[in-house]
Image 1 (cartoon, rainbow, N blue to C red):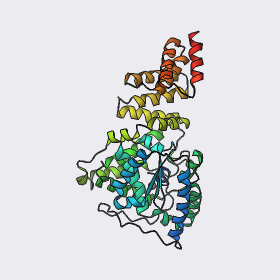
Image 2 (image 1 turned 30 degrees about the vertical axis):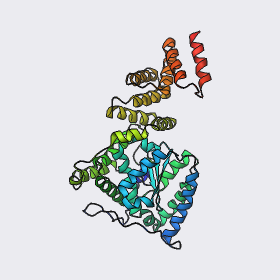
Image 3 (image 1 turned 90 degrees about the vertical axis):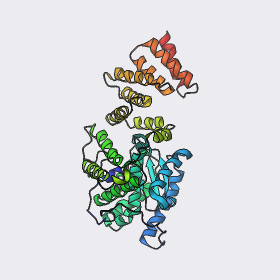
Image 4 (image 1 turned 135 degrees about the vertical axis):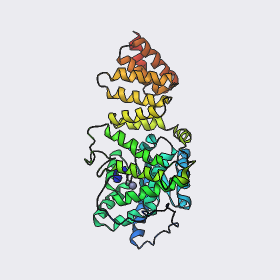
Amino acid sequence: MACGCLAGLFTGLSHAQGTHARDAGVFALPQRMLRPAAETEEGGLWSLMDREEAKLRRSRLVVRDEALGAYVRDIACRLGGEHCSDTRIYVVRSPYPNALMAPNGMMQVWSGLLLRASNEAQLAAVIGHELGHYLARHTLENQRDLKAKAAAATFAALFGAIGQLAQLGLLASMFSFNRDQERDADRMGIDLMAKAGYAPAESAAVWRNLLEEFKTNPDNKEGSGGSVLFATHPAPAERQETLMARAQGPLADISKDAQTHTQRYRTAMKQWRREFAKDDLELRRFAESESLYRRMIREDSEDADAYHFLAETLRTRARDGDAELALAQYEASAAKGGDFAERSRGHGLALRGLKRNADAVAQLRRYRELAPDAADAALIDAYILEMKS
Ligand SMILES: [Zn+2]
């Protein structure tokens, strides 16, 4: 998926050489890479990336949660075998669905991707794809292309210096692999995940889901560059088909008892999901968010958080009729057992907007019980007073 990211996925610059993985058999991991000598072109690229990685390590956008870090790293190790010890994975707090891989073994997994993956197999598909770029040394290949070189230099300068989300988006659109490299990475990724016991069809599902979300906003036109995700060359339908054909063809035998690990994924994301959804709301990409949360509800109609996320999206969008729509979703969240502070808060504010004061006061009081130290406590208390009078 991403290559520089999801963006790169869709870039179709020059059709370059990348032939590493395009033969018939199932992809086998190459030997571990030795660190290239400093005076070589590749060595220079590594040093550059090492410096950017040092900056990244200090960035406030890196999620410093050992359990989450270990979880994501374990997936990479299941896929990458002995290459695991040569790669470092950073979970980056950015609401865009993306992942990036640098040639020195530094990988970024963005929180927007973690929010969107339905299960561990889907995350493994993206990580496997990124590992593919690394194992096939696609960045070095690009370095030999002058045009790509300029882009890569900009990319390198931005890679670690991600103080702002806007920069992240820019970064994602700048560093891209070509179509052949993307196809190779897709193939390596799906093979690695199948061999690690993940259901390979989930790699196609990642594409299907992102495309569905992308298409809900009429401003998003494939090839328009209007979206970080589908910046340039889109052929997601083709990629879905290719991945599905591989899952059902050459990989069918080795993936008979393959898993999606949906519950394990849910558990690992539990602490973070609501935070990531809040980040997503700040982008104010309401059509995309609505589509995302409706998909979550479709996938699990008992998911109290998903109803809440959808309610928050609708309430924030605040078009005519959205308050009523949001209210119905808060109620659904509550009915599914969603008794948590943020749900009561949003629920109460939606009721307040609809002038249902008594119900609003009850919800906001529940919010204050559940979040006694909330940053907006004074404001909410004022609302409660005002509605009681
Ligand atoms: Zn890629």
